[in-house]
Amino acid sequence: TNDVSIWNNTGTPANPSVTDNQTIEIGTKFRTTVSGFIKGVRFYKGTTNTGTHVATLWTSTGTQLATATFTSETTSGWQEVHFASPVAILANTTYIVSYLSQNGYFAIDAGYFTNNGITNGYITALQSGVDGPNGVYKYGGGFPNNGNTANYWVDAVFSAVQIDSPITYSLTSVTDNSGCTGVGDPLSSTSAS
Image 1 (cartoon, rainbow, N blue to C red):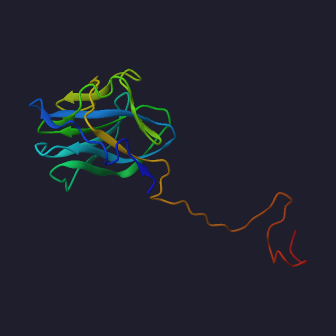
Image 2: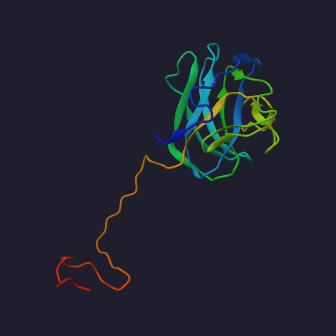
């Protein structure tokens, strides 16, 4: 497929599961260099990060664009969920992917976004300061509008081209720029023109 994520399956956190002992929404700010579609959200799960997890895609100002609940999670490692429909996003525009951890556990690398962002192909997790902090969160859930420089290992599934619904055309006639309608045998001298 044409899907790309910030870390794919190669990135792993230094601390796969810590807790602040309360429900928390945690996320990552990102941009893409081309317009395309966000198909879903991924996050790195440590073994103690149990319970239901709900993914959300947000605009940078807090409008919820899509949400989905993770199912069939493994005990640990990268988890992925797709939205019911891919969400169109614009190039060079900040968005946030997040997930709600009802039991309050999450992965973290403190200071990860202090000096740089991370780019993979068209998609970049922003360095803190490019568009406010990165490593965003909100206790209790909802739009994660607090932040620092930590990486909470929340990732987007981005496709530069939506391939789920190919465009088909039904042609009934063809007319060229000189008015020929394409009727008859194009190799015959009796073709209409």
